[in-house]
Image (tube, rainbow, N blue to C red; front, top):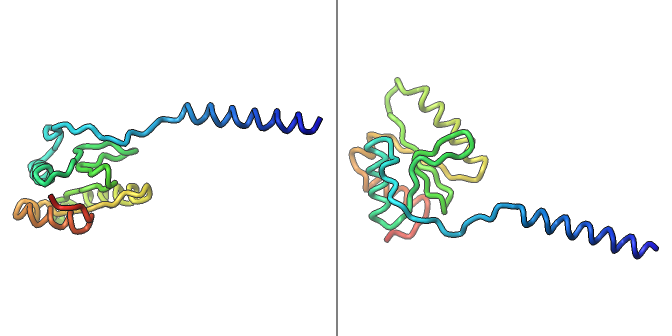
Length: 139
């Protein structure tokens, strides 16, 4: 009798796990590449987008993740790229950026921040910093 109950219990557990496994969302291993340059909100973001695309790296602009929006994301590497104004007037924007940074890091994202002035002066230097810190093979 105990053996029958044990088999019955294991059967229920098996079918429950099978049901739960089939209902989970399957994640895609391949990301479709589209031209999303029109989603960039500023000229600085467009410069970063163009530079990364020229070097063969897929970048996604304006990605919603939880309650925050990531301006530029390298999704396969879980890397978020933020730009911020370097003026003292933009204190609120930098505090909001710090809040987003902590939120994303709690989910395993790496956050890179660049002042907008640095990117406007020399985009290649900023892109090289991205490649060095991220260890992406430069194409």
